[in-house]
Image 1: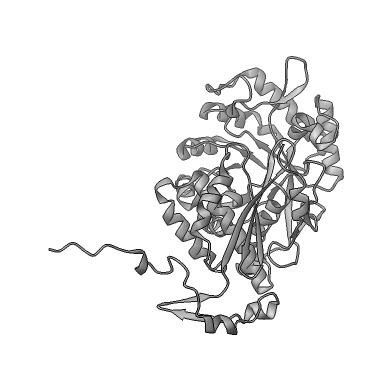
Image 2: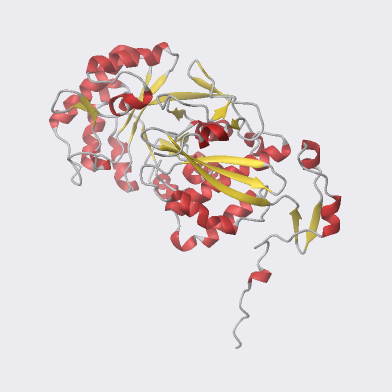
Length: 442
């Protein structure tokens, strides 16, 4: 039997864009006006239809943000339409900009409005190294293309997905007290050193209209000042064993008591324990938090059965999954009924894939919350996710950050603990490129 003919690039559908004929391009009106974008000339090629708009340039930009970087992706089409996304190159994602640069030749010349095709092609081309930085790079590209696709139609990205379902997004103040322990100088606020400082900060959060906050485990150091307990990130002694002890549990009780007494019984309190324990330690933490009526206990662990064991004994809801990539990673956690709330990182997964993840979670009666500890553009992307899915829980947002926050306009509007969705096209905001370029990484 003869061997089958090899598959060549020429017969792969839409593997590379085919440029419309000169005659057709001559008839194309400029798409700089909305009406022209909506009526752009289309040309049939084989079995597909190729739009005239093409990706012409991809550029990464990074700005100093104190203890981290704000990183942005700018995608420009052949007629000057620009789409933006934000990604994170901090906390384990070093080199992400280089991965985006490496993928760029694969998308130059493609139609940005066919973002699903572009991301599928990138998944094919990175299949032998799935997830990780490759997935984060694809997500950054996807989110920028969604901005272009929406702007080309003069609509919001939410409208591309049939939304929004809601126009006001309940949010919680994330990294409560933690950032003021570690990064007060960058934020420009007094440092938190004691339980009394924590209580005063909690009262401030309530006074500013927030209905919920999320904190970490804060314990006294040798000098008596509080520090964030985080052996799972290798910041101090305690790794790689990740053990617990009774003193730690007592300090956790004192921390949560200082917050609950300051804000009263109605304020939502979330506790994020990250990767800082093993299964038995997370079980002891769950027992310790029982008196404080947490909205959720957040746990990161890479074994869905272990997480399910914790969930079944926990006195409060369990939230997890912020480090997972795609529906394939989420599926075993859902099949094990490991969590009450699925935390989806829209910046790592891309909005399109994130909405698919939320749909899968919905099948298992699990609500979703975005993982959003980045800059303001990421907040708009996460807010779009929150606005579009039916099974939404609450949105994370960092209020404490560097003093400069003019990277786009208008800034996020938060009223009574809710983010008000912007109404403009794309992500609803305009990026201040000059402000970003004025603050290069140090």
